Every structure is written in structure tokens, then in C-alpha cells.
Length: 509
Image (cartoon, rainbow, N blue to C red):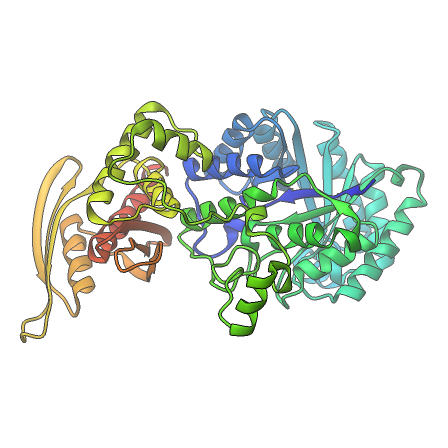
């Protein structure tokens, strides 16, 4: 019988720290439910002490999900731990995850503490967390660059104080697979010698600064680790974290080599990656392993010939195994509500009747503009029409004129601002500059445009354009998304969506 690897997903915490990956509450709950459908064992919902917004989000997620553990991150400090427990205590299976640095570099320059002081803080903080719950995880921050014997000492202190999971992170992605495997083996053997260390679960949290996060995690499994801390699509601080779908499929495809299994529903890998991509407005790279558009594409004649003769010649996994849609057209202008509801449910969207009506109306409008309506189009409609925040600003009409007549591009916009109709027109360097400048003049904002990106949602000349806009103002940033067969219209929607998000942030203060 294969041994079980626990999947600890930190997309909602470490992943959200990735630049531009901020999510609002509704988006976090939507992603949390998808992670539950995906089958992760533990979900790190956030860092409750970071802000009131983070606390509220973790508490809301803890109430929403039922079948998995919900963890809240905390520094090794009483106030942090109190806030973490206050947020996750509503979960059916709550966990407190606390951390403290153990490397000489961090202890001397960041903590300004001696090793003995660090051990004392570990004991005090873990004991405090354990007074709330028996499900306590302790992480030795920068474990990859820590002294191995001190790591054992720190882990034993945590176990003696009530920790049931010990996490050794490669916080800065510095270690190499063989090196990390040796470290994990040494620490596990040292801790197992202690009477209270025999049943503890060992975990690893690897960063991808040198592109080795998944390789290091797999190496750690060979040395006895049985929990992996990962994120969907590998998002996270700097170069990101170990990628959930890459790790899971390595274990699945090479089960003959590793001999491990997970509780992940692999058919939900692609839908999870797509949902995250849409929420944070970051397209999945074409060459991304497992879920990228080119992952199962074959252009070389030799490869095409081989696949036609036997798929196993150049494909090591079945696209259906990760939930990759076949691309078959299933919806159009003649489709009914019942068919749409069934389709959306199959895609993982359990919408209320009134929400299905909204998507149905939007789908009919889209079907009048483009011939083929694909799954990706429906995803865009759901996220844009159902899971958007209340509108302070709403687009009514736009008209953009551009060409080589010698006149500068011009944009005219009609929109609602707090229920009042406003109009304006302006010139610009290009059509998008004119459009954004006109909208900015109407709402009276001084935002800085940090990112403007256009992608085609599907193939074909009539594909919807998906536009991502990132705006900043007074230290706040917001990502807006818009989709429409007309990329000018999609751009206006994305810009206004970002403005609404900035306004929402200001209201919540």
C-alpha cells in the first residue's frame, strides 16, 4: 500500500503575497471552495494578524469549507497566535501554524536573539498555541540555511511544547536537492530519537528562487517528509513556491518511482489553475508544465507522427487526467438555461438561479457577437458578471476614433458614477490612452497605470479579448479584468473594474 503525502496549500496566504495577486473576500472564498474540491488536505487561509481584512477573510473561509483543515499563520508571538485562533476556531478542523527563524543569519540580524533565546521563544509560543488546539504546526524559518543540530534542538523544543507537525522551509530557495534531502533525513532521524518525536509529521516548504522548489520537495519525500506546502501554479514570494500541479503529477505519473499517493482530484488541477489565473489576472504561461497551453501541443512533424501512432510516444499523461477540456463547443445562442446550469455545474460553479439568469443573459449577448462559446468564455462571464464587487463606477457606452487621418485618437465615454450619468471626451496618444484618460477625467482620479495586458481567451479571430489592468494610488494597488470581443471595450471594463476595487479598499478602511 502506498504511503500518503499530505498537501498543504498556501495559495491564499503565501501565494497572495505574489506581486499583483491580491484577491478580495469573494474571490478568496471562491478559490477556497475550489481548493476543497481539488482535495487539498490543509488550506492556509491567510495571516490573520496582518490586517483586519486578513482576519475577516480567514474567519469567513473557516466557516465556508467543511472537509479540510484550515490553518492560520502566526509569528511566534502571543498576539499573533491569539488572532490566528480567533480566525480559524470557526473551522471544523482548525490549525495554528506558527514560525520563527532558526538560521544564524536571521537570528543575528533580523531577530537579534541568541540561540537560547530563540529556543525559549519556541517553547513559549508553541505551548500557547497548543492551549487552543492540538493541531499545531511549527516552522523553522530559513531552515535550509540553519545549522542541522540547532534545527533538531528547535524541533524537539516545539514537539515537547505541543507541536504535531514540524515544517522545515527552504525559505529563500537556496538548497540543492541532494543537500536538502540529506538535511531533512538528518533532522528527522534526530527528532525521532526523542520519545515525543516518533509520531510527528514532517513537512517542507520550498521556494523556487533557483527553480528547484518541486525537485527539493520530491527529494524531501525520499528522506521521510510526508507533507508538502505548495501553491497553485507555484505563485508566491519572489520566484514563487513549489507548484501544486507539478508536484502532484510527478507523484502520479511516476508512482512506480516514488510510491506515494495524495488525496488530490487530479481532474480539478486545470480548473483550479484557470480559476486562479482569472482571479489574479495573470495568464498561465504557454510553456507552463501540466497546465500551459503548449503542455500537450505537438508541432514537430516527428512528434506529431509518433503521437498519431501511439500517444505514449510523446505524451506521458492524459490531458483528461488534469481536467483539460476537450475544446468541443457546447453552448451557443440557441442553448437554454437548463443546459447552461448543467454546464456551469460541471465546471465547478454552483450558482443560484438568479446568478444563472445573469450569466445566461450575458452568454446570449456574447453569442450574438461571436459564433463559438467555449468553456473559457463562460468562465470569464461568471467571474465578470457574478463574482465582481458592487459597482461604484459602471460603464454605459464608449466610442473611440483612431486612424492615420492626422487627428489624434479620441475617446467619448458615458458612465455611471454613484448612480449619476456622466459624459466626457478627450484626446490621447493612442486609443487606449485616450480611453483611460477620459475615464480618469470622469471619476476624478489620479491613479498610476502600472500594467496593461491583453490576451485572447480562446483561439479564432472572434475570440474575446481579456484585458488586465493594474492601478496604484496612495500606496494601494488593484488589478482589474475585463473581457469582450472588442478589446477596446474589454480595456474600459478592466480599467473601471480596477477603479471599483480601489474604491472598495478605501471604503473598508
